[in-house]
Length: 237
Ligand SMILES: N[C@@H](CCC(=O)N[C@@H](CS)C(=O)NCC(=O)O)C(=O)O
Image 1 (cartoon, protein in one colour):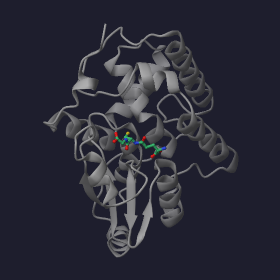
Image 2: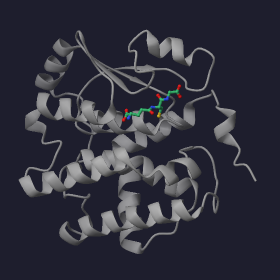
Image 3: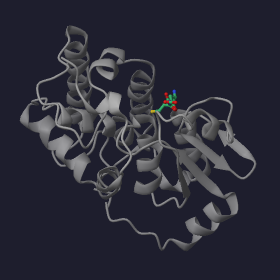
């Protein structure tokens, strides 16, 4: 197992990140699933970066994001003069820039599997997104179980079970923590908020993710935020 201690003293990494001038622009930690993914990956792999946080759902959100990118979305990675405006593109860029960190699994077949499940998350799960948005501070137990969301929950469980069948009982999806775990971390947050019951092995995986120091830091940040987005704070009906 890879150590999950955060070690910000890796001078070579610090030096390179400093030269690259990495800044990650994110939304609120409580609500922004796409921001959570690269933030957790960078933190878990000890890649230092400056954080710029733009609260979502305010009258200023669009103009603040527009200062950095015309995409109108966060996260954004600013790497020197380069702007990368999509969570998966950011993770791929980092995996290339910091190859020695093995942010993807080392084995080519596992790597292809990891990329597939990240691509599936990136392109799909719309029902889960719509009915069970992320709100780390909220308790929406029992809500959001539309047929489509139930189907998406089932598919997430299938994906995790497939991975668990190959990795060990105390492992992450592909053994050591990887981009794939960062990609599914917001789903873990949703399952907690909406009280989704999981088979014991999957619950144990979800607990491992939530307890990972990088994820725990993100959760602490979400709990400390004071701004709210009212339309995501009350579950209608
Ligand atoms: N495909 C993009 C999706 C990014 C996205 O939709 N971000 C949301 C926040 S989680 C956003 O920026 N919304 C803009 C807004 O709410 O004004 C990615 O993977 O980064």
